[in-house]
Length: 406
Image 1: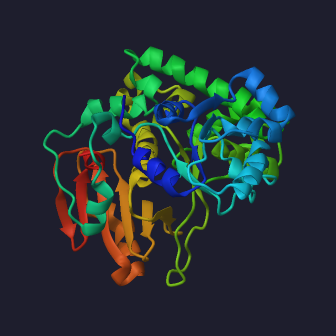
Image 2 (image 1 turned 30 degrees about the vertical axis):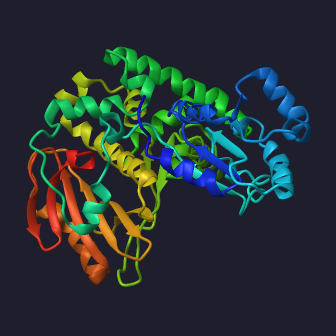
């Protein structure tokens, strides 16, 4: 069983907060994590059980009455339970009363958005980070802000790196022995999310068109969001396309990464960027195999960028640093794939390169970002397919992709 980054944070939150909600993609390991807490006297209830779900939906207040130190799995299937939980918590504010999980971000639902404000702490749990698979304590984010990244002579490079990216991070996928079995799992997962999980949170007018919509998003992962183009693929309007992307983000299939900008720079692109939450699902959505990617490395770049962004997001869930992720691009096409802003305003930039060599021009976007930030710029790195850290200038270096988990 893997040690998850957020396990300690969940235990801390339960010690001083009445309700703790762990949200993240279905099958990311949330149930495995919370069921470990049954051993400390918590009652486990899952809303994946149809009988239990019917009871919760028909009488939320009665369902919650009498429950204490309870685990409720897949809370998004009966969101009205949150209103009943609010009532009982207001009557008894002891910490650790409810541990909830959700495979959709229910806090975006209007009827429950404010119901537990000040009463609940929300933690995000994503698929396995590489450091979790290896059982390592991650140091990448701290080292990045300190400018002290280190090389890795045992770094995963070349075709081994391609294989790692194609696997993704879902526990049930990475234990499968063959690529074909992993892709079968990914396709089944996508079908489940698109036909079941979305129905729990919204009415979808063109449910049968969603697989086509997701395939188009997969083709544009790592690129700027174009809602009109996405909407046109299934013959809906701009607002509906925007809503569908939002719903897919709500069930943790995709991320939209907001742009970083400052008034000191003119002519900056202020459009979000799209990423898939898991590189294995992204590959399956695009029909990309190991053979195809190794024969045409030009298609590896977008996969690798989404993989790195997802790894960074996973590291953030377990970090003590308070970070906000962005991307940066100006109208001259200078860009930085990932910009991280610390709560004190310090900035680092990460550029991802699917190559074993790095040129000075690969730092153009990072240099512009550094100039715009001035003393607030801590460090910029180009992560590449090699083993060594190579300094390029003050506060700029190339570093192995394996730094993410070394």
